[in-house]
Structure formats: structure tokens, C-alpha cells
Length: 552
Image (cartoon, rainbow, N blue to C red):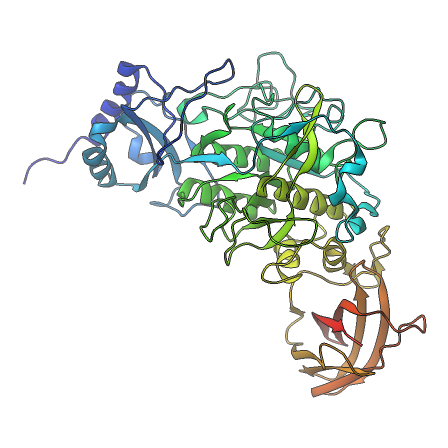
């Protein structure tokens, strides 16, 4: 047998080619992508070169003499462990005609787990039309499914990262809405020692895969500014209209160019930065249709830190899956019109969690402008706005990420249209008898899962019958693992508690009847309602919830 190959020399050979050719590439795996010229375009497409993302243990590249041209990305506790270390991602640029041999050789390097192209991503909307600054034109804000969120009085500012094309922070409706990194001073040094110089107003990851990046987070396209306005445009300032949650603070984290294109590696780096800078929600109104390990690890890293990723499902009008929306740790958002019907362009598949308004959405654009855009991008912005406003009424960390995700996914099926009232009810937390007060007058109910219990207390076989309710009464059936008391509450979708019932229960199957009369003595009108069942015992409790429909 011959001697083993010198892996460090082989990898270093690839890096030397980068300097020899002196060209930086933006990889495209689909025909038809082009480069848009302009002062803001910082990458140059080259048909002769291609970028690859390598996932490996640090030891796999320990022999490299020059690592500066390979930008590393690490997700502590998120990626799978390789040889007992946290895996890292590297981007290496090689001549296209050497791909086949180089990829196979690289895969054989000890410690290398995956080798994949640095896939592109694109924004998920259509062009804008300008100059319509009237709140009356923001029809989606006046829909019954959105109004309950606008009635909430925020108690704190929630940071929402817009990972996109940038944000025009000089826009009159956004200049006071940008999160400021108070630990950083624009003096050319990394004051807060987070690895990014002068990132007082976010950081740009465009070109990060080839060693670039900058403090310049200005919008080079318009898309990111539009999404930021949907979420958090200022209210009551006599300009334009308003965002869904003006109390939110936007972290601009651009990684795409003036054509709305970037790479998955740069997007992953942007997501990690947003998590590390304290975002509670990350809006990703972009995607691509090939699974990427580096992007998957970035979204999982966000989840491991309790940060919600809201992503656009895509605008192809088919069942194709777009990433990051299709990752289980993300909320996938499709688009609908004001009628609630799914938009013809919106992707629809089993991983789309919810529909939101995405047709002709009026919002902010660079240079103090306003305009309409259409797409699942805008729908994702609506969901980020609603969820951030609901979270703003709750104490920090009072609800888990899994509870938030479950609250979104349980509220409707097939999927259903966003319903802020349902979110409010499901996401409001009760600790013992302490109720979190909200402007929508929501009473506290433990939210987030179908059934929650303090073992060994269990509540099973929970159902409401008949449902839909066409008769003068209905029953709530359930099996209790131990005798105690049952508390049943019925809420409307605006978060108002209509009825509270208490009844002793025995071990085994039980049933509690309701005559449809609320606590105010009135029978609720036809519609959909939420019910919550809680089993209370001396040794613990268990909870469950569901939906019921009144059709009398």
C-alpha cells in the first residue's frame, strides 16, 4: 500500500488557487441566476469557480498554513459532535472542472463529515409599487384575526432580527425602531469582543463565506426595509401607517445583494449572529429548495437558545419545500388574501404551518418611500409582527420556544389563517393563581402543548362531544389518573374567558356538561372557541385543550 495522502497540503493547494485566480464567487446551482451590476454588489460571479461548504472537526485542517481565506462557522451544542469536538463549517473555492475529484478526495479526509455546494438563496416576493402612505390602505391590520394583537399593550421591547437585504435605518418610520448595540462604539475596534467590529446597528454578512463582512447594514434592495416596516414601523407619528408591533426593535442582519440573492452559508452566519445578539424572533423571508447542513445547524442553534425562526414558505405555488421554512425548528408561513384563501402563488405542503396576509402589503421602502409587495416574504413579516407583540405582553422567558411553536401549529389545520386571538389565549401563562394581565383581558392558562402534567398525574382521552354543537348542551369527557377537581374554561378567539366550570372528578373516565350559557348569562354566538381542561389534585396537576364549534 502507498503512503497516506497529505491532507493539509491538499487543502492548502485548494486555498492557493483562490489567491491565484483572485476571484470571489457566488455559487448558483440553478440556471438563470445573473449578477446585477451596481455600487452595492460586492460579489462577482465566475463560471470557472465554485464554492463548497465543508463540515469537519477542527483537527481536520490543523495542518493548513493559511486559514484566513476560509471563514469558519461554529454552532456550539447544535451540530453533531465529530471526534469529540464541536464541528465547524468552512468555505473553500475551487475551479469548477476539478469538482468531482476534489469533492471525493475531501470526503475521505479524516474528520470531514459533509461536503456540499454553498447553495444560493433568493427573496420570496414580487416588486413594489410606490407612494401610498395611508394607514387605511393597510387593510390587513383591520382584519378580525389581527385586531386582537393590536389591542395588546406591550410591556417590553422584543428584538426581532430581519435577516435579509438590510434595513434603511434613516427611514422616518424606522429610525427609532432599530436595536442599538450599546456595548459597541464606532471606532474601528471590537469593543464588545463579539468578533464583529463596529456592529452598533447590526452586521452585514454579505460575502462572509469568502472572508468579508462589514458594519454597513443599509438596504441594498428594499426587501429588508419592507419586512422591517411590516413588523415594527412607528405608530402615531403622523407618517405612513404603522407596523404590527411598533414596540419591537429591529436588528438588521443583511446577507443578500441588490438582486435579493445570497448564499446559505452567509445566511447561516447571519442567523447565528442574530441569536447571539439577543433576538427573540428571527425573520427569514427567503429560501432555496435544497437542504443545507449549515443552514439546518443554524436554525437548530437558534432553537437551542430559545429563539424562534419565522420563514417564508416560497412563491412557486406548488408543494416543493423551501429551506429554512421546512426545517422542523422553524415556523413555515404561506400567504393568503384578505378573504383567507391561500394565495395562488403560495407554496403549500405538509410543513407549511400557517397562512398570513401576503398580497399587496403596504410598508416602508428605502429613501423614505412606501410601497406594496406581495409574497410569502410579507406573510412571514406579519407573523413575526404578531408573535413579537404577543411576546411583548409576557415576561421574558415566561414561555418556552416549543410552546410558541406548538401554539402556532395547533391553532388551525390544513393550514389555517393566522389568528392573533388564538395565539394570545394559548401563549398566556398562569403560574399558580398569578395571571399575566393583557390588554385583551386574557385569563392565564398554561399553554403550549396538548397535554401537560406533573407525573404521575395524567389527563387522557380528552374530548368534547357533540362537536360541532348544534344541541342545547355539550359534554367534556376525560380520563383522570387520580381523583381531584376539574376546572374547565371556554375562551373566544379574542382571548376572553366566557365560562369557568369546576367539578369533582373520580379516578377513571369522567364527563362534565355545559349548557352553553356563559358566566354573563348569555349563549355565545355561532363560531369557534377554545376549551381548557385542568385536573387539580393535592399532588399535582395536568392540563389539556382543544377547539369546539357552536353551530345552532
